[in-house]
Image (cartoon, rainbow, N blue to C red; front, side):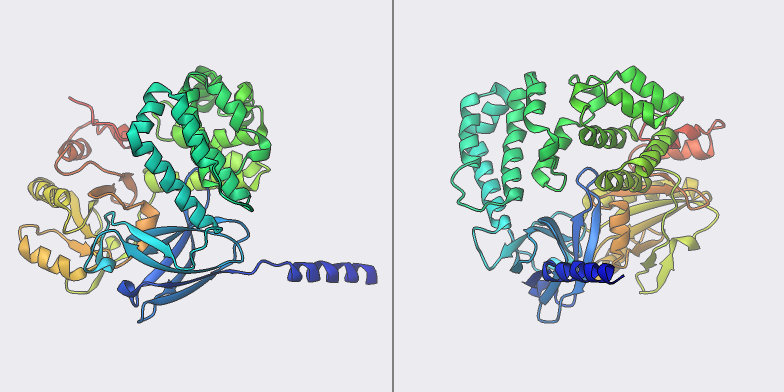
Length: 485
């Protein structure tokens, strides 16, 4: 008993001595005083699902401080309202940062749902830091590819001379102690462009760049190369997987072991790690492909998540399933609070016994406003069956007040999202306009849904007037145009 106690004591003491110090980030964002800063990382680099690490309120002077427990180099995203910036950080380091904009903006924190570049500037600028090296590398590669049409020479002419010059640039004199992450980043940054040369003989790229020792799933450059190489792999001429049998197993059986064994017949997928990741990637592509049974695809991913021995792969599969749920029919819309122009709170659950057509917009989005004129035309015919609702993603709620007064003809409920950024992340509300249709039970049956200027009238006609109803049009993930009569 004494020996066990002593052993445990030394194990705990060792962990204490060699524990990682937290990453410390001290920053300034005077334009966002009293706003919330949210820090995310990608949970995996196949789905690119964001994982919220921490939220912190920026003080009235615009200062903030964040500590994070990280054990490996990590790509962080800083988000203030709709503004987003990035930073690579390494364990046990301290960063002093501030944010800048490429163009002058009067009130950056009021920017709503559109891309305004925000840059993270590291004030303790040291070349040996990972973030600085990656930025300098990326800028140098971009300048090289733009100069003298070098990218076109590589892409269209397979110009080996220009590729050699790019290789010298990427693997140039970077000094000592680069670290594993940066060395891998260099290697697969070059691999992405070298693969263009290898396009006529892609097996050469595979042999050179994919092996178990260098399979760095946390490295952004490696995963960009992986995702590009294996995109829609079941349709890629490089693939040796019999597509007919692949579809048959998914659609008719489905049997996880048979599917994995079938993929193992492809020489490129002999390695178990690669095979499983390609499996996840292929099913990630397949769920929105009409050729594959949706329910079976989902069940295969669930079975895989329960049986894989690799924790990273389990996470990728579960994130893929979570991503599917945010994009397909059958999921209930979360009942987030919304704010009327008079400041009172309302919820979507208050609108019952009708289908809901939700239109996400901002007041300065011209195409969004054009759609609202389309909604105006549809309301007289479908008001008894469909409740139209427009949800503004404007940070400045005063804009919505003035907008509603400017367009009194838009006489359906128009509300503000009340800074519910969980809703933004949950449903990926980025590119606008964006629409959603819910049934009477609050289930999402179409997302993204047709816009009011386009085929929405046909869709509503199918739902309420076509005696056959064509319910299959609302199958999960469906994006087809309604059938013509």
